Amino acid sequence: MGILLPFIDSNLVTWILLVVVIVSLYQGIRRGASGSAKQLLYFLISALLAVAGIVVSAWAASALSPHLQQWLMERHMERPAADANFFVQFGYTAVSGLRDLPLFRFAALFLVVYTVMRLITGFIFGALATVVSLPFALFPSGGAASRSVGGVIGLALGAGRALLFTAVLFAYCALLPQGPMTDYIQHSSLYREASAQIIRPAAGTLLEEKLPVFAEAMTAELEQLWQRRYDVIDAELPQDIVAAAVKVTEGKTGDEAKARALYEWVGSRVAYDWDKVKAYEERGEWREQNPQQTFATRKGVCIDYARLYAAMARAVDLDVKVVTGLGYDGRGGYGPHAWNEVYLTEHKRWVPLDPTWAQAGDWFDPDGFSNTHIRQS
Image 1 (cartoon, rainbow, N blue to C red):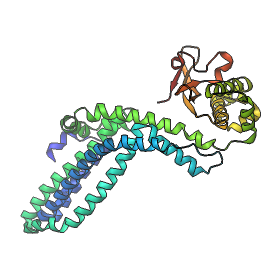
Image 2 (tube, rainbow, N blue to C red; image 1 turned 90 degrees about the vertical axis):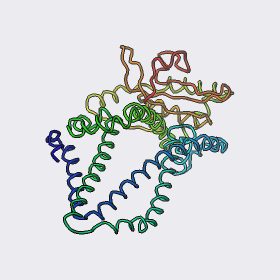
Image 3 (tube, rainbow, N blue to C red; image 1 turned 180 degrees about the vertical axis):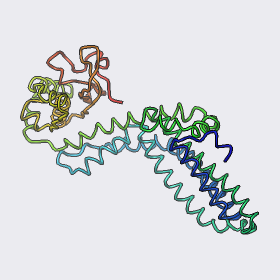
Image 4 (cartoon, one colour; image 1 turned 60 degrees about the horizontal axis):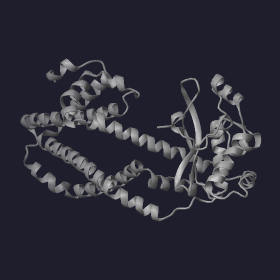
């Protein structure tokens, strides 16, 4: 304990680490040499199994990912009908996310494989626990000597547990450098010392550099999956919207002609609702509205334009997305914005369009669209 004194401060993280070590020391003294040695072995085996499980699961997820993607692509999933129930719509969104988003697919496979591996290894270890425990019957179970040895083993076990907790905190700080409690954690002198002397040299660049990059990419994919919620929320298409979409695209052949006709209709028929913006900016009052309300009132903001366009596009069998992110404000900055992407089969690609800005110019797949529209990530 004397070694730890220079690193003791009033930080709660410091005291949690100390309590972990002290409790393990006390348990080691109480259990004696035999019980403490057994606990230390169990801890080491569990740690090794966890590390092995992570490595094998990552390898298996990487190997299985392209096969799962190919299998899903061969299924040729059709978008559910407008009157399909919530679970069918949600299932389509989740499965299409597995098909289209590689990191999301990797994470899902990793969790499945890791869970199965832990169940199998846990069962095997539990079955062998009695055999593993036999050698420790030879250790003395009582007396001062046994309790002293137990205390030393308990201290080592406590140090291992504290290091494991420190590694978890280190990963959290690497993933969320601006997150809640990050600064407070890093002000713990004991945490800083353990991180600098053990965790950082052992982990190298994995936790501090590669893990945040992976987490950022994963967040971007989950955001894309989250944006697909409008496929579920707005799955039911009111008859007046369907009728309007069919009428607007009447006589149009090809996806591009239909998509452009709908873009021009929504962009010219819906007025921007400045009162809704003012209510949100001044009073924090957000008036959520569905495509039916936008269609009926002919008023809305960017997300309402995008949701109505998506509903009308689906009504005439176009594959469409609602995209959220940042849009150029014309004053050198960017603000929250929403627009659409539609798939044109004749060109075999997704094209962007912004019905909110339709009255200010041609924003149907123009050159440089990405210069003024930044997808959320």
